[in-house]
Image 1: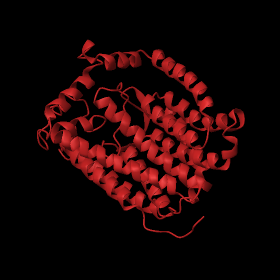
Image 2 (image 1 turned 90 degrees about the vertical axis):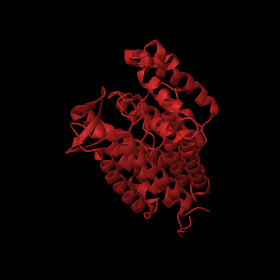
Image 3 (image 1 turned 45 degrees about the vertical axis):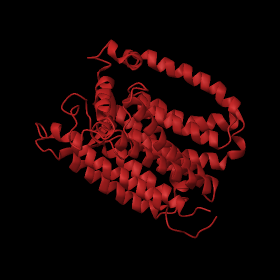
Length: 364
């Protein structure tokens, strides 16, 4: 393995900071109407907090960019165990938000252990797969133990319950395991079991069934389960080609629930139009391309899988979030990386990008 560092991938830095900058501006635009009234009484309330987390995240990104990534292979197991511990703690003393007990309150701020778990699983799974690659073609000695790593966290996350975070975690793990060389025949069999289990999870909770129903036809219950999707489409449609103008969204005036969070892309499309929304997606594609290039060009298997896990996690979240706001997927509660309001998600995403940048410094 080469120990000679080169410059980090500039395009990853550019794409990340561009999205982060757009995110801070759009969080302010989408939240100012809500924030200027009680209990916040400050139109900059959410924007200032987002800026604070952005600064913390950029600092973490810079630190991670300068720590050789193979150091994390030694600490991956401990990080994974800490993630499990936090997921257990949140079930005991966590704060319930929107029906999900997924937050730990710390003073005026809160953290989401599920966000830490995603990065913890990626790091530990990359270590396990790189150390046991020859076994991955075997079901009992390879695939089963590899799947057990994310399934433990997935199970704890579903107890909260938080189907969105669990879906991203499992999706990222499956991508990593497949890239490590698992047999397609094993995946087909497990895929059928997974689909059956997924359907079971949906049927076990009435609100999930309603979400599926509203996704297929949101106008069946326009004031209930279909409300969010309908209001999101009402935002995207009038945006047209160039948008209504920055700050001119109508749907953020108490029509679209939490427009600065899960549905921020709706406000982007409404204010900046098709052109602005497409530009954001193109920058995400640039980040995905350079992240995949980093994974391919990494000097060792651990670096490749770690980079793949980080960029895969980001890509899956983008696909799900944009799919939800455009009415292609059921509402899942997934944030848009770097743009949606949220301290835990933003800080952890930027930390992951920092690790990705360090891997890019050792590309072949």
